[in-house]
Image (cartoon, rainbow, N blue to C red; front, side):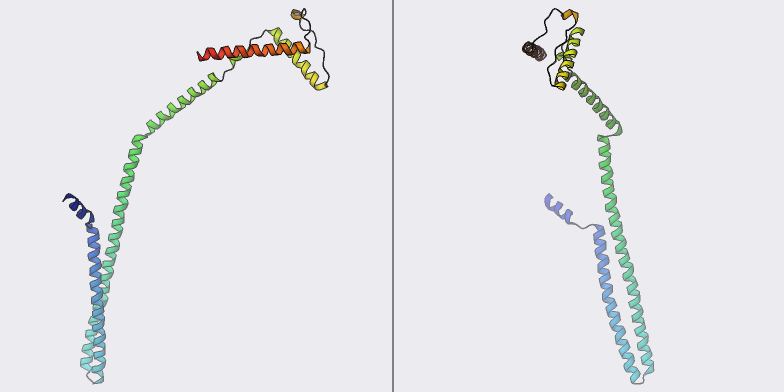
Length: 223
C-alpha cells in the first residue's frame, strides 16, 4: 500500500503543470469559438448579399450589423487567447526560475560543505604541514646522500704527493711519453720511486683497502 501511495504521489502532476494544461484547454476552446464566429460572420455576409439582390436594404443592413458583431467577437477572442498564451509563457518562466533557484540552492549547499571540509584556515594548516614534511624529506635526503663517512682522511703531505702524481700523469698523457716521477718531499725521500708495476700493485691495495673500509661502514650502518 505504501509503495502504491508513493507511486501515485510521484506521478501526480504539479500545480504549475495542471494550471498550464488548463490554460491550453481554454485556448483550444476559444479557437473553436473563433472558427464559429468566423463562420457565422461569413453566413451573415452571404445573407446580406442575397437580401440586397432582392432589394431588401433594411435586411441587408441588419445582416451586416450581425456580421460586424461576429467579427468583433473574433477580435476579442483573439485578444483573450493572446493573454492566455502570455500567461502560459510567464508560468514557464516562473517555473524555470524556481528550478534555477533550487539548483543554485543545491550549489550553495555543496559549496558550504566543501568550505567546511577545506576552509581557508584548514587549507593554510595543510599547506604548512606539507611544507614542513617536504623540508623533513629534504633533510633526510641530504643525510642519506652525505659522503663524509666514505671519505678517507689524508695528511697534507699525502695530498701533495697525490697532486704531484696527478700532474705527472696529465703531462704523460699530453706528451705521449712516460715521465720520470719527481722525488717526493723530504719525509718520503728514503722511499725509492715506485716502478710502474709497484705503483699498480699499490693502487690495487689502496683500492681494496677503500672497499673494505666502505663495506665495514655499511655493515655498521645496517646494524
